[in-house]
Image 1 (cartoon, rainbow, N blue to C red):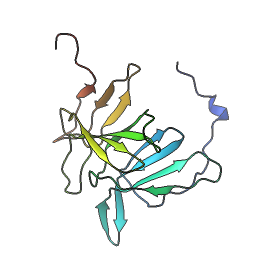
Image 2: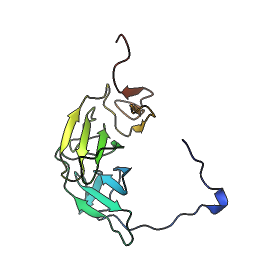
Image 3: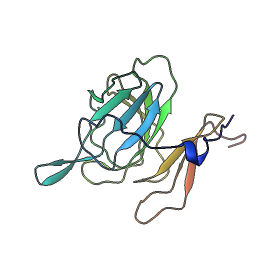
Image 4: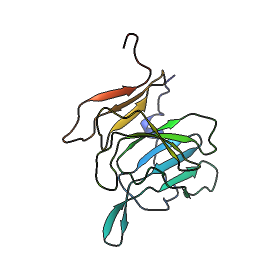
Length: 167
């Protein structure tokens, strides 16, 4: 069921705690009662560097972002993230789709990341390497990944789920 947002007049932005590490081009999604911030690019001295860092913010009062274990699959930027609802992880799990790595390669990888441990488990690859894609979960549980950059801008979309009848 989709609920509508409150009226425009009742909406406003409010400050939240700052990230532990300033970054850009990171993935971010809500996981259970937390917010996860994954990978991205951070400034070290005068240089930008890709990070495998993961941070989380819980929804409890007085919360702050805290560092979680880094990604075992290495540094990543401009990936899409989708929360995975499972009960066998104390911090939750995230599906990390595409993005780029520390060598500026465009990735077609799909990794299931356990936020409590940082362990990445490889899942079926995307059909295309995609930096800066958008992703969403459909009501039937399938995951769609669309757009992004490969050699040029992509107009394609792909879906992860069980094969269709007869395929």
